[in-house]
Image (cartoon, rainbow, N blue to C red; front, side, top):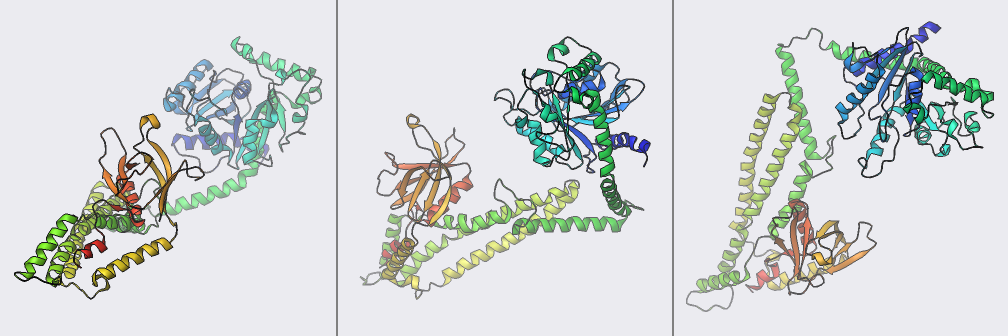
Length: 638
């Protein structure tokens, strides 16, 4: 390709850039470009305005550039500007260009000084410029709290990285000479993505503002912090010059005189200055396009082939073709089936990091919620003793018996077994509800077909409801089977002695487990008075023997350790003013649990968290209030 052809490459890349921007799509082809990076007040705006010879960029304190500005400079005999978002309108007054940039920025970011990665595309035609495309990015900043959102610095950094991480992007790192060059924000960012300095072009501004007796000669000669493409020094107008509307042509003449007369720079004056920088960038971008052209063309061809292959399927497409509709319908239904299975099995491509769902929620219902519901079955000890007494007396009739009749035993036991029906049915209800929630989540991909989505949800939900009825029947049948025959030969029913022995063995096994950690997590101690600091969050560690809490999850500063002996759990009604869900731990012997408190109120964000913690406490042997142990139950009979 000849030189003329290479000169036409920059305008051609500009057309591609505009094409992608006009359809609102990101350019996945990584077009060759130059990104301008620098800190606030580094002189980026002055450099760009010197290229054009006009004042057209917003200025002021704080963050001025809040959206990327894609600036396309096009050599022309006439002078005007146009924006892609209002194409066809020519701007000859460059004050209006500045106002349009400000207005378009506020239109997307709002008046609260926010930032946005959506670029503004500006094309400037002028006899003063060479063909060149630059992307002016927001200045790197460390904004004080109260001036801007605290994460504004990270947002700007992320936006800059979106551009400069691309191998096709040259980096124009602008650094003022009157600051420590070794700590330049622009050069640091460039080094992060271009450690060898192969894509970075250094620009040193404000050389005329350096302290007397100092200079940037070593940097400009590429001896200090070397870059493959080197450095170019420029001298921009001062703020006083800008406020006084000093002519840019006069400023360029002053810049030329500065380099020719300065003892440290006169030997390199021909390689310094704004005109030299513009020529250099034009040549660098042209060469960069030439170097990246083979890979760019290869990627473009591969994407074109992929699009052709995809388009081939739609050539001769007839919207009313029944076979195509059937095929598409089957594909969507099959995808729904796959998504549902993945959510239950836990192998989906999207992992929820906010809450449990799908198979994980069902697992929690079976292994935490259901056991806890079983233990919650209340057995009033006084009422139990009364029922046992009446059952024994009614069986003996007029006789005074020596032993407990089997019929009395079975009558009481069956009455307790029947209580299993409610938690079992409740468990089925919770599983069914989670399955229905999963169906709704999986049908989200059918939003573009509302009738199909509605019908899919209806059919699958109806099937689940049908299976729900069958599952409940099966569960109740299993309980009825247990009621139909009480196996008194089972080891659990060989009298109080054996029951007591098993309880003792259980306690020994629990003791032999040592101080095994059962659960860790954050909880709020709710019942601390305001005089003592009020409710506060701590890191809790539950073991087989104790409940401890620490200042934080590093577990270095222990605040308290509570032995689990004689502890039980009780529900606490949620107060009107509180958003937390509360439960409490208390001592069955009416002793203080924590300092001078009879109860320890613990708060969680959700009821699910409360149920999970109570289930964990159950594993540690801390039971809900008003429960009766197996040993006590058998003691009533023997």
